Amino acid sequence: MCKRYSKFISSLTLSSFCKALFAEGFLLGEVRQEETVSISDSQISNTEFLQVIEIHNHEPCSKLFSFYDYAGKVNEESLDRILKDRRKNVIGWYRFRRNTQQQMSYREHIIHKQLTHILGVPDLVFLLFSFISTANNSTHALEYVLFRPNRRYNQRVSLTIPNLGNTSQQEYKGSSVPNTSQNYAKVIKEHGTDFFDKDGVMKDIRAIYQVYNALQEKVQAVCIDVEKSERVVESFQADVNKLKRQIAQKKNEKEQEIRMQQAILSRQMPTDSVEPMFVPRMSYTGFAVEGCTLEDSNVSDPPPPYSDFNTSTHDSSGSPGLLESSSIFMPRPQAVGSSSYVSTTDYCAHEM
Amino acid sequence: LNQEKPQQLKSAGLCRRLSCSKKDRVEISPEQLSAASTEMTGRPMRVVGWYHSHPHITVWPSHVDVRTQAMYQMMDQGFVGLIFSCFIEDKNTKTGRILYTCFQSVQAQKSSDFLFAAFNSVSYPSRYDRIEIPIHVVPHETIGKVCLESAVELPKILCQEEQDAYRRIHSLTHLDSVTKIHNGSVFTKNLCSQMSAISGPLLQWLEDRLEQNKQRMQELQQEKEQLLEELAALE
Image 1 (cartoon, each protein chain N blue to C red):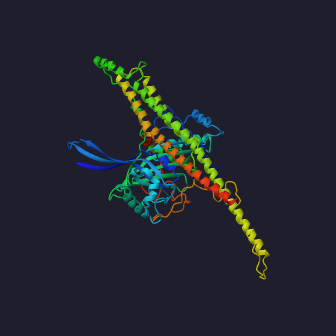
Image 2: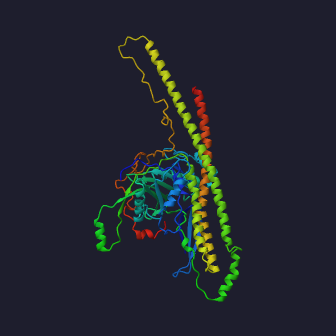
Image 3: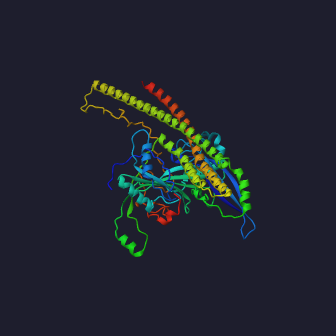
C-alpha cells in the first residue's frame, strides 16, 4: 500500500527575502521522491511516498510586470531574459505584498496557469509573502504561505525551514553506565583507543573542527568581498542620484530661461487689450536642495502595491496598520500569539 | 514612561549566552553589557536596548522577559527590548510567520492581584506589565559593515558555545571510553548541524548577494553613462 504525501523543504535563507527590494521573482530548486518504509503492528510493512520539493534559491525580478502585462498575459521572451539558463530549475514563483489577504489574486491565477504551461512544471508552486503591522507599529510580521494552485485539494502546503532545532547540548553524557565486567572494560579500552590521538583528544573532533574552521574562513572572506561591493554600489547609486539631480536642475533652468524669454517677447508685442500682463510664476522647485530633490530615486521604499482583482481593501503603501486592537493581528483570528503572557511554566519548556 | 524622542539603533552586537545560565534564560551580565558598548568601533555609542529570539514560540515577552526589561530600565529609562520570533507556523492556515516586537515594562497597577494570589496559592503574579513601543525599520539600499560582521560572527559564537560545553564534559575523568566516544560524536554532530543550518546558508546568501551587487554595479554604471550623455546634451 502506498501513500503520497508532499513536503517542502527550503534551504533558502529568509533573510534574503526580507532584504529583497524586489516584489516578485522565481523559485529555483528540485523535486524528488523519497520512499519511507515503516513497520507497524497492524501491517507488515507500510510504504510511504513522500514528494519533497526543495527550494534552493530565488531569482528576483527587477520590477513588477517584467514578464507579464496588465491583463496578466505572460511574455515568454521576457521570461527567458530574466531566467536565462536557470529556466529548467524553476519550481515556482513568489510575490511580496503589504497588508493584503493571503489569497491568490485573479491575475496571479492567470499568470500561474500560463507559467505552468510555458515552463512545463505541472505542480508549479506560488509563495505569497505579506507584511503586516499592528496599529501602533510596535509589532510587525512577515507572513508566508505556499500554494499549489494546480491541485484541487490541499492547495496550501507547509513550508519547512531547516534550522538548528533545539540546542542539543543535553546530549552530552556526564556519567557512564556502571559496569563491573572486566571484559567489557578491557574490550572497549583496547579498541576504543583507535578513536583518540596521543593527547587523548578524539580524532573526529580535530577533523570536524578543521572543516568548520575552513568554512568559517571562507564565510569571512566572502563577507569582506560583499562589504566592499556594498560600498561600491552605494557610491555608484550616489553618483547616479547626483547626475539625476543635475539633469533636473539643468532642465528647470532651461525652462525658466524659455519662460523669461517668452515674457520679454510678449511685453514687446503691441497690445490694446486691457487684460493684465501675464507674469510667469517663478518655479523654485528646480533648485536642488540638499537631500530633497525631484528625481531622488527612492528605491529603498517598498514598491507601491497595485490593486489586484481580489477583495483586498488596502492599497495605500502609507497605511501602517490594519488593526484596531494593538495586540491581535487581524483579519486572521487564528493568528499565532496572543496578548496574554506566556506563563513561566510554558516558557521553561522551550529552548531560547 | 514618557515618550522620548525616538532612539536610533545603529548596530546590533551579539552577546554570548552565559555559560552557567539555564536553558531558557537570556539575562546579559553587566560585564557583557559594557563589553558590548566598548566593542562598537568608531563613533562613541551607547547601548539602547537588548534583543533576543523566541524560536518556535510566541513573540510576546514572558514574565521573566518583562522583569528583566524592568531591571534594565532602572539603569536607563529609555532602554528598550526587542523580541524576534521565527519558525512559527499556524497549522490551520499553513501560514508561516516571522515577527518582531518592541516593548518596555511598567509597574503593574492592580494590588488586588497580590491578595488574590495569597488567598488562592496561585503563583505570584508579575509586578510588571508590558507596554508596546512603536518601532520603525528604516529601509536602506545597502547593508552596513557592522550588520555583515554581526552575521558572520554568529557561527563563531555557536561553535564557541559548543566547545565550552564539550570541554566541561571532557574534563570529567571518570568516563569510560564508550562514553567519551559518544560525547565526541555529539560534538561532531552538533558542529555538522551548525554548518549545514547556519554557516552553509550564510555562505550561499553572501555569494548570491555578491553576484547581485555585481549585476547592480553594471546596471548603475550603464545608467551613469546614459545620464552623463544626457547632461552633456543639455549643456
